[in-house]
Image (cartoon, rainbow, N blue to C red):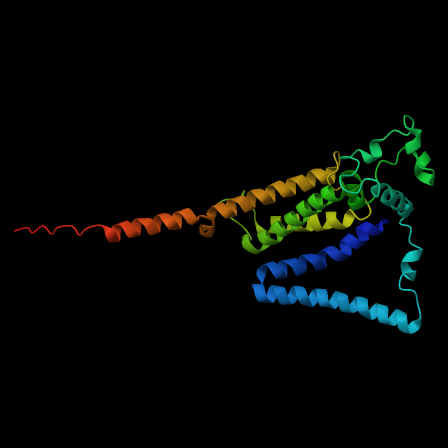
Length: 258
């Protein structure tokens, strides 16, 4: 079976996601020392490959950025340049949630850019979810939004390591395949938002799917915390207090029966 796609973003997702799923599932099932060693080894390999490329460029006298200079991402780089200039005007809190592209240039012509896309009425996003998040929420909103996304990914990795393959007694409880689905979706969404804007959008199907994954993962994590004895220190302290009272209590008199 052959799969064809005209978008490089989807191609990158198809190629990268299986490797990331294998890496994170291995980390979730490994011991802490092995997981740290695997994570450090993977990071070291990537850093080593980057340094190797820079050394090769230095020896051959090539520009390291040459392969990327001709990339325009179908005109997206012009949008990103314009947005980065606008972000500098409102760096901390941005223009307001989902309001950056809601400005009507017909009412406020001074806000209309002279770039080629200024006359395109249908452009209502920056085709880069992270830059859009910076433009609408500023540094504060960007940190909160990316933090929520990272938190959801961490919960999905945690669920892979702690959920069973199948739960016969409670079919509605999260299982490992469902956790894999959530992790695959969250990783794909993270990559997809480098060229599209679906992160926390107010009318996007992928944004609604993000909320669904986030709510289900947080609900599962809350149930896990309620069942974890380490999360209930009051139960242990109560048992200690009861045992102390039993030790301090006077001995009961012996009743002899004849």
